[in-house]
Image 1 (cartoon, helix red, strand yellow):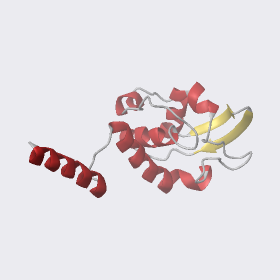
Image 2 (cartoon, helix red, strand yellow):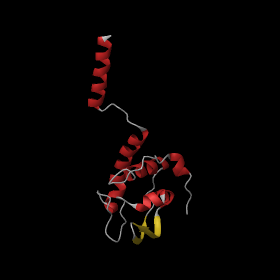
Image 3 (cartoon, helix red, strand yellow):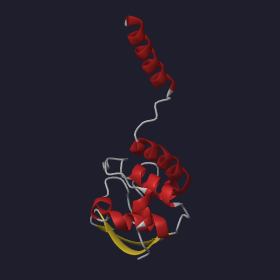
Image 4 (cartoon, one colour):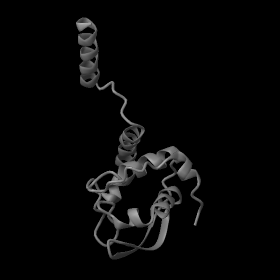
Length: 135
């Protein structure tokens, strides 16, 4: 019995050391979303998610993400044009459609919604993204 327990403990420790533990679906999605963000979004929204002054709205601690989750997903899915208000500041710019798949959109949204002070444990799913229609 002691040998079985030791083997289980050793396997658990090695799994954690080697990074073989899969994590939750949300954790996996956030990890994938970070890679997408770093490739496509970081140049405008910056590494800290604070955007670019009055030109590009912040994603960090953004009230817009919380108040308008479907519109936020639509902006990533179809691009964004026209006025929006984020944290009390009006923005009237244009974000091009990044050409992501529904899974990539879900992943990047999960990353954004759980970074820079944003917390949203309700996972954005592919099914949710599929349900978002062009405004």
